[in-house]
Image (cartoon, rainbow, N blue to C red; front, side, top):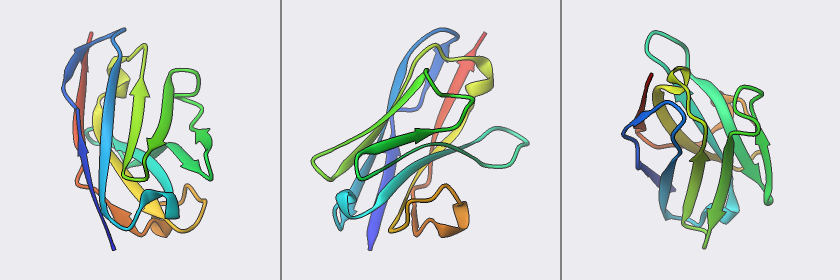
Length: 119
């Protein structure tokens, strides 16, 4: 069992950078692939970024602006740069034994952290 808790979301200006975090308790994150998803108001949740066996992968919409990382098996991060108003969303981290972007395959989810990007 893994409990995931996101933090760091806040209101920022367009063009700003922000790092959000995902803290894990229970089993180490190194045992899992870790993904970030986001859900904008009125839209479906979408994959943003993932990391598995230290290999990152990204959605096209955030490639070259966002960076996913993990450390000491207990934390995952999403470094976001050049933020745009369309990046406004609740950001969720999730973990799975599978290297996948499919939401239904994710075993554990956090409750999310809200990022608002003002223009």
